[in-house]
Length: 362
Image 1: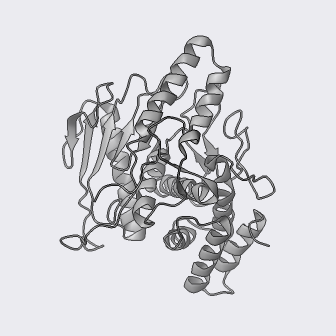
Image 2: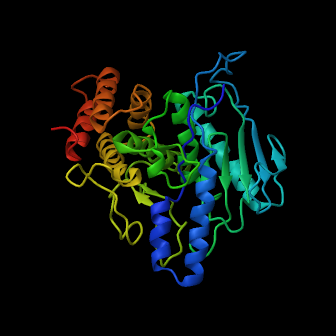
């Protein structure tokens, strides 16, 4: 079946790029606005999941060795996707470092979802995962289009997309969400008068859109921690670390302390609790609230984030409806925690107190 809607989320939000452009010199400003324009065109390729017929055969048993289907293409600094095939599943590393990073980090993310949650690729049906590197001339972004990962090479302002495991996991998790919640979490139709460009038809909005972004942030951070073998006290809980040029900041977002510009970038406006939230806010700003709730719950539970807190979030978010609110997410995660561990358990109390701390529930 064809896509139900077209929507997009990029590794570096357009809002952040616009802020960088505002402070850049004339030459850099022109380049950054070019990135935003190119990103706008790519947005029309992002598609959501529509229910499909059952797979012809069941996925492999959990205990068997994973058999991914990864393909990497080289767009050759052009904008026609996917580009020239450079590496397929099982091939030896190639000379193109970006192609190898895209291949390896996609594999780490897929391994995480299989080994921790028993999920077989993005759609849980062993779908092929394609990646296109060297998109556009110094294109300063990366994204999951609904069909594949796309990476630019970046410039003097922002770069390192294929090396950023947490960002790759974040974007691939948007794919997980589109297959997990039919209709899309937080996706709304955009009226013609409100579109950034004429081809845009849908966008992430409201608390449900912020939850969509948060789910990707949470699992992007978790994949990085899992791969590094870090527990909740060892992790720094930063997302997109080292992607920005030093003069712009240290990271894209922080789950530990949303909106802390000393940890992230110079005009980070992420919300940390509901006292700061305003209707119509950018979904990346709003995502700070559920992000921080996950951080607080994971810290209070202790150990490794993917052992208890992660499964609670994974199971609970799969139950959410497309227009779910923060309160819906709080109820769902608390319910799952109580079912898994008991209503008086440390885990359930940690989840409930986390949502109370960010003032989603009282």
